[in-house]
Amino acid sequence: MASLARFRPATRRIPAFARAIQTSADTTQLQDTIEDHSKPFTVKLHEESFRAYRCETPSFEVEVKKDELLKMYKDMQTMRRMEMAADALYKAKLIRGFCHLAIGQEAVSVGLEYGIKPEDRVITAYRCHPFAVMRGGTIKGVIAELLGRQAGMSHGKGGSMHIFTPSFFGGNGIVGAQVPVGAGIAFAQKYLGKNTATFALYGDGASNQGQVFEAFNMAKLWDLPAVFVCENNKYGMGTSAERSSSNTEYFTRGDKIPGLQVNGMDIIASRHAVQYARKWVTEGNGPLLMEFVTYRYGGHSMSDPGTTYRTREEVQRMRSTQDPIRGLQRYIEEWGLATEQELKQLDKDAKAEVDQAVEEAKQSPEPLTKDLWTDIYYKGTEPSSMRGREREEVHHY
Image (cartoon, rainbow, N blue to C red; front, side, top):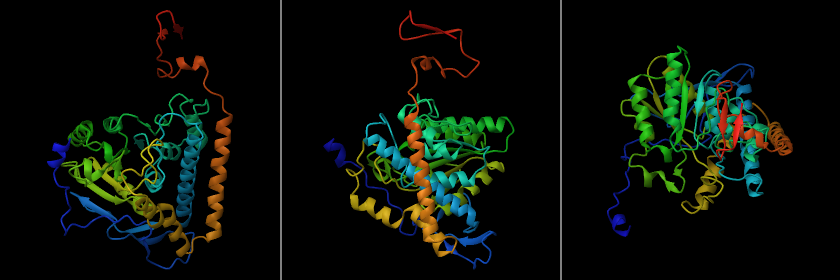
């Protein structure tokens, strides 16, 4: 290993003239005086909110509404509270096994949902809890699933990495495997003649998987309405992006597929980029790569302290200067959309909603032994019988 280290190539550097994405959460500026809070108004994103590859960047002027901004704020707070509750339940040993949390990345999941339509499709990896709720699930359903209870969204048999809704295809535990599945979902949507988009998310750690590039090739070959979304939170497990990827500009890695890099810490930029991406693929332009530059505050999973490959000072700096929730809070207060007290009430409402969901999830019973035989096949397609662990153990449907 020592000899290999001597031949390690130098870290790839972006040329000095290249413009880097900025990840501040509060650089969007109000364009006009807001005279009527019931009407949309225009804001201007920072000029370094996007970088484009083989396509144009979205407009930096964005139309937003007071009610929508307040809803996004409440949803981000609720998603963070849910993940914090999962953290506490894991440390109390009530949640077992794998558990990957998305604290710090709320502008991606919430921004995505506010930029797409109910009939669109989403698939992601194992950091999936907020997506499951935003795509029609419930906080109780997620927490109960983590606890292994019947009220869970997969009836307590899937766990943290296997949660689904009719428009959300998981929650997938195999690194990168959701990307070709996402291409398949997009193929199905196109085959059925539906004017919808499929968003297939993966992390920077999965970006070097061969099946990811195979999915890119098929999507471009068939011009599928697929948006491949890299959530670049800077670290794949315990390895920084620079140590694992020769090209860390993930939005440029689709060869002939255009790409867009986005400030994933500003929810207004995130939502606007998603709207742009959806419009791109549903208008017949073929697939698009989108990279959200974001940051996770915790470790890769609950078993990772998250401080052996980065400093505590780095994490604290990101929390204090680039937090997506605090950024939106600043917009709302400075633009006169709500007072600090009104936002604190939304915070309390989010906490109360999560606390109630946790208590209800705890009351749900664990799955029964007979439940082991259910949900193996799609309902109505089961065989007449199924063998268990031993030849003599047979269940008849």
